[in-house]
Image (cartoon, rainbow, N blue to C red; front, side, top):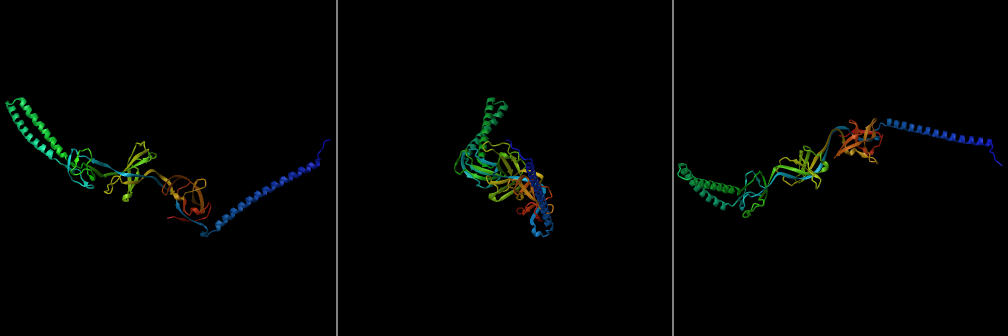
Amino acid sequence: MAKFLNPFLLLLLLASCTGKNQTEQQDKTALIAEQKRLRTALQEIEEKLTALDTNTNNRALVYTQKVERGTFQHFVDAQGSLESKQTLQIFAEVPGKVMRIEVKEGQAVSQGTVLMRMETDIIDQQIKELKSAFEFASFTYEKQKSLHDQGVASLLEYKTAKNNFESVQQKLKAMQNQREKSIVTAPISGYVDKIYARAGEINAGQMPAFRLVNTDNIYAEFEMSESYVGRIEKGALAEVSVPTLQAKFENLQVTHAGQYIHPNNRTFTVQIALKKDKRLVPNLIVKAKIKDFEEKNTLVIPSFCVQQDNKGNAYVYVVAEGQKAEKRAVQLGMQYEQNQQILEGLTAGELLVVKGFKNIRQGQALQVKMDN
């Protein structure tokens, strides 16, 4: 037998459910309205407290600087050594026994200064004999020439005397030239860095007798990574220091930037000419700062002002309207030492918090002073 639901009971059930849903909706609407009212009230209270807070001791003390545009420069550090464009190994041009060394190691010499003399006893004897032979050959040649001109001597006799005269003359000149080469002189001005020859020893001319260095044209040389090709160019600003001498040379320029990458270490050569200084000698270790980037009319701030949030995003604090702290996201450019280039996020003229930024938060009231 089929069962039927009482219509009256069904109506009561529907009315009960509808009333419950309407009550919950009303309660939710009331709670949202109350939340908005409380937020508005809290904001009004904070604004009134800020307006009433005339005691600067209750504000966070910060020091600021104006954000300004300027020139940003980036330098790369390098280490190398001093070289000389004129470092010569001096050889004796003729073999023989060393008679006397005329200089000492470390001595400054001028071009043409006598460095060493070789013994010339045998050469002198040969020159003496050739001079005697030359006098006789000259006398014979003049006689034969005179007789030939008179038609007395034959052409053969004249030619023979002339040939003998010229032959002896050439031999004498060659021997005299060899004697001149027995005196070793400095081909350039500089100082005697090393003496290899020893008095009394035989110098065959195969080994150097002296090393001569000219420090007038000394320069610093560096091997730079290929990543700097195109960034370090001839004429780039540089600064070179010599730690051993505690010396620094500023406002220099790159005089040579190599166009060849060494395949063994993937570097190229950079040279910086130095001003004349008697203290500078080849192979001294040097350090340099070489400019590889410059941009004018860009925003530059102290790098220590930049902070990072937990996501790695960079930000700084600036002073907003009403002397409140504003946390400002920034896009960073290049950094060198304490200078940070800013690409986006700041405007010239804004007040940047440079001291006290660790102890403030967004919207906090500030006591602002300019940093000197």
